Image: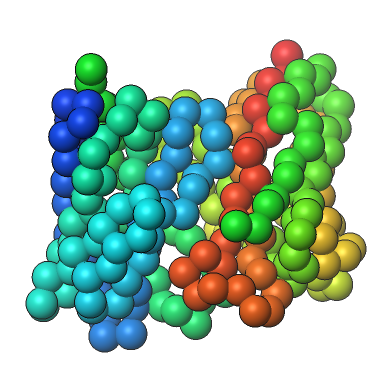
Length: 111
Length: 119
């Protein structure tokens, strides 16, 4: 699975959009980009995933660049409850569900 | 979404004793479950892959005789930390993969984690 690079930490004002970047320059054509988050002392929670097209669900939007070497997770209106560590993971869709976590980005939403 | 339950959520044990952690998929069948360990301020580290009815596959550096994994049914996997020592104190998290019919992107569902403290 391709390696990802994320900034270690970010701050965001409550109510504003949080844009979390992820670099995955060695991604291959059949690898998906997944985002999970982990709120303190809880198990990770799935957010969104995509292959090449931008995706949106009730939690977030995922913007993948045309060359697929990077992506951005967007939380449109961040709340204090969105404070968490966000993990960007790249893996094959045929993978058994095994996830290799990097260091992630600690997002602090401030009032 | 599918629910994965871990028990206990928190356990304190004496050094030298064994501790069993359960991971259950409550509303789906899981042919594969994964066990992770997380130390404070660090990321999740995959320990092993647990397959129903067969031996677990351990990641490099994880002692299989110390961390016993049993996956006897499609809804239950257990992790037993044998002869626990203070350095085994950690946050243990399981995840389960939907056996069939699951959405591709949400194949792995996580439990809430077990905080183990060895004193």
